[in-house]
Image (cartoon, rainbow, N blue to C red; front, side, top):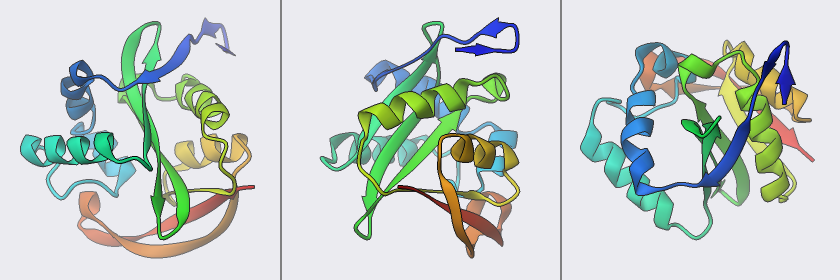
Length: 163
């Protein structure tokens, strides 16, 4: 994918055991945690992270992929079923923000996971993520207020749907 003058070579692959250290580091970056808002109670708790990853990697209704850029791990993307609806989530390493990585990864993931409707949500002040989702065809269906561990407060999150 071309984004400005930089070529963004983004790919998805199965999540491997060797990815876990890198993902743990990405998912505990303070700025990233604040932006994501809805995260583990303690992003520095490696035992909780490992238990969560073991659970989701073995769940049959979860599709989880590593995101690579030029062969380097830069995040993850997944779909999961909650209350009968398939929802997506993704995490992009802060060093790759604003470079088209999330948009390209989401485009690739939507070719893999063809369930529709598909749902997403993001903190309402996470404008970057909301733009990525809308660019991929998701439309806003509403908002709700939920408790965000990263902010230790209730905040507004935007709900989206892809038909």
